[in-house]
Image (cartoon, rainbow, N blue to C red; front, side, top):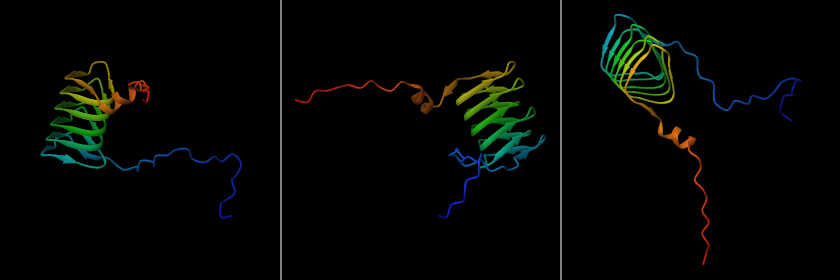
Length: 142
């Protein structure tokens, strides 16, 4: 009664997750040194130095970028240096990357030439999803 008529060839959207809001990434430029914790809900591009913990949705560390501290993000691309632990769903180490510390991840990509010294740890829920379901057991009632 109140619906619009469907046109031929039109299909209903099948995506259930909302689209990510497009926004310009914040920038810490080359030559900038930031001492202390840094947090943002958005994206961050780092060409400078951060001495402290860092939280963001998406982080890109350029070739001149340096982080000394803990990083917690959804996804990260590293072309520079990181000294500390990284926790991210998606991690990509480019050839120029140098990472000294543990990486906890769901997906890890390491390009040839990248330096990584530490442990690669898979998120616990990813391991649980990959495991086979437990076998069913039948108990007779008395």
